[in-house]
Image (cartoon, rainbow, N blue to C red; front, side, top):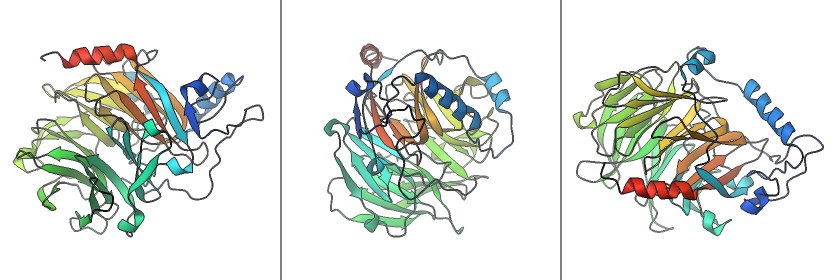
Length: 418
């Protein structure tokens, strides 16, 4: 992994384009505005749809694709599966636009900075602080972990679960805060393992065999730590040969996927307390930065800088089950919905893909303009949230609700015994 930052200061220009493009003056977008030819970012494209398609095509061709391992994108796409992208699993509901809702991107390769604990509690980082946004109350937001509580912190990762918010920085330090009270104490500590700047590249909630809440953190030093939240101590640590960019634990706790500065991903047994792999997942042509298990633990997905998402069946990990290709750049975030029906793949800019996780032959493509800062499902899978953070095209938080025809299918799938 290389050092870099997408942070930028100064005023942002919300609208750009030709003279014929009507300037957007709205800072919140509803479904009624979409019918008036506005998009979720506040642009009005009335009479300019052709210009929009031309501009999006230009961005596809000119967007810089960073590579740590030299490879041919054409070769990746030859391995990709043909996907029917005419489907709409989630419908737009509401978005807010403006600097106050600009999610922070501390490193251009790490974008998993958006978390949702319910359909009306969405957490994002802004100006060195953690905020909560309630889309059902429209513009309401409040700070839950302020910059004054995290002195000298440069946020690198975040996760929220079980009433606790965790943030890690670029030096291996962390902050923990309970969400039960706004004025509660903040616990701080270090997860660094000896090197000068052991950045916390990713954090995700996990549950120990005793049922205690843990935070699994991935580090530049090549370690994966399991932090006992209530004991504030490292319960387990595993070492790997390369920098770890992301880790994901299966719901039953028997398998853990580890991806990093390697073209291969590893499946390990966290109960062994070592980094010895159970299986090696091959196929990617560049480093990977995200991974996720399906709710039943049978499938694992990895997102790579080679612009693809690969899905594996853990019962036969030697072969890729599906290769899903993006349009413009690296797949920075992958995540299964809790219902198990959908797989999210977020590119570094302009596109978020929602795949049908039952066949991987159908998908919805959500398009916009600008750098992405995060994408996530709500725990009940009924909502999809997206964060755009761009100095040219503006910043926004958007909510999409599951289409009614899919809601019935999800409820039926939850009643099945398998």
